Image: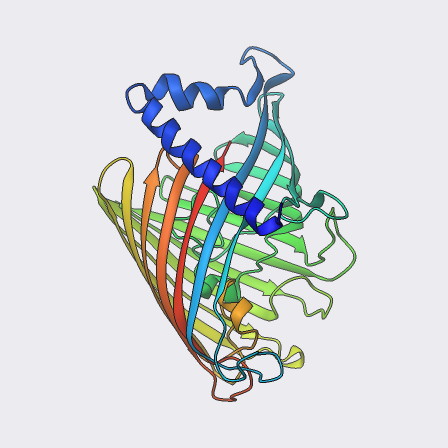
Length: 385
C-alpha cells in the first residue's frame, strides 16, 4: 500500500471513529469519553505518601491540507511549468507524542514524553524528547520546573498545541517564537497577588533531541500577567545570547503584549509583538499584530476569525507559515493573512475536530523567492490525554 493512501485511510478511520464516538456518547457523555479517558490513569491514590497518580500522557494530531497558490515566486529550474506555482496537498500526522507523568510526594511531578515518527519511521520511531522534567510546587505562589520543557512566550507560543483554536500557531508567533519549543533549562512561575502572575526562566538554546546544556548558548524569558475582570493580559520579554548554532529564531530580544477576553459566547485574543534581529546572522527587525475574535455557538461548536500582520524593516525578514513554506521557500518583508475556522469539541480540547480556511499574501521587495498569494484549506483531528 502506498504511504499517501495509507495516510488517507488512517485519517478516514479516525474521522469515522470520531463521529461514531460522538454519536454514542451524546446521551451519556460521562459514561462515554470520561470512561475512555480514565483508562489513561494507571494508578491513583490521594492518600499515598509516595505516588498519588501515575498516568499515560500524550497527543495525536492528524492534518489534511490543500494549498492553492494563486501567485508565487517560481524557480523555472524547479517548476515543470516554468511559470506557474504548484499546488500542495498532504495528509499526515501533525504530532504524535506519548509518555508518562507521575504526581509524587504531594507537591512533586515527574514528566517524560517523546515525539515519535509516525509518518515515515524508516530508520527509527523515536524523534526527540519533548517534556522531560522534574517539577516542584509547594504552593500556588511558586512552581519550579527543571530540565526539558516548553519555553512558551507570545500569545500562541504560550498556548499548548492541545488548546489552539486555529489549525496552526499564527504567523506572528511563527516568526518570533522559538518554534523548536522544548529546551533544557529551569522555569519558575506562580502568583504575586490574586491579579498578578509571573514567569522567569533560563534555557539552553541548543537543539539536541535529548537534554542539551552545552551545544549552544542561552536565552531567558520573563512574563508578567494581570487579570482585570474578564480580561487577561500578559507582557513577555525575551533576551537571547547570540550563537549561530542555536536552535532558535535569530532575535536578540522579543517583546509581546497579548490579551484574552471572554464574556459569555464572545471572545477576543490579541497579540502585539516585535523582535530585534541579530544583524550578524542576517535577521532584520520584525513586528506584527494578531487579532482573533471568537464566538461559541454552543458547548460543542465554535466559530473563529483571525487576522495576522507581520512586517520587517528590511528585505527577507519574514517567514511564511508551515505549509505555505512548502510551496515557496523564500522570505519576504510584509505578510497578511485572513482566517476563518470552525471547531467541533467532542470532549473539550481533549478530543476535537478543527477546520480552517485562510487567504495569505506576502510581498517580497527583493524578488528573490518570497512572493506569495494563495488559499489554504486544512482540517484535522486533535486528541490529547
